[in-house]
Image (tube, each protein chain N blue to C red):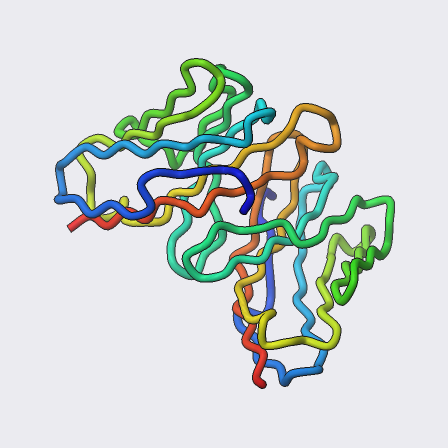
Length: 110
Length: 116
């Protein structure tokens, strides 16, 4: 119940394309859903986050879509750029409990 | 730069040796977390401090692992009698006090441990 599933494991997108990463959870106690971006040799950095009372949140080229009934949420990266090439982790939290997905390695081809 | 500092960045040690890592969180943050990350995986929770109190420990944290945060500021993570399976990136994160800030964890760059 503490697991967060994430897919795909890796993703290759052409520059200018849309990158979509999907996550699913089981525990309905989770009340905050952040996405982290990690570059090689660096720690994860918060990208964007959403609460379950909102179905969509957009910040620049990054959008989270949230489906509470399906217990699923996704990250959309519009107009993907080579600089977006990184590993993306979804997470689900309640209180001090943070559970991360296994990550998606995104490569954006120039 | 997130403001969370970890030292050292890399540590190579022989099996059986003890190692200690340090984390300096963002100064106003009262919550501090340790995670372990292996290649191709997301961070796995190890332990959590609120101020100087260690409030939660994962089952991943065997008795060879100990963490402290003596004055509620910096924290140390010690691994005794290291094993090759301990090789991983050890990440520290901190978060703030209020109900919104506590959900936002800021990570350091990590300490990469290699046990030979």
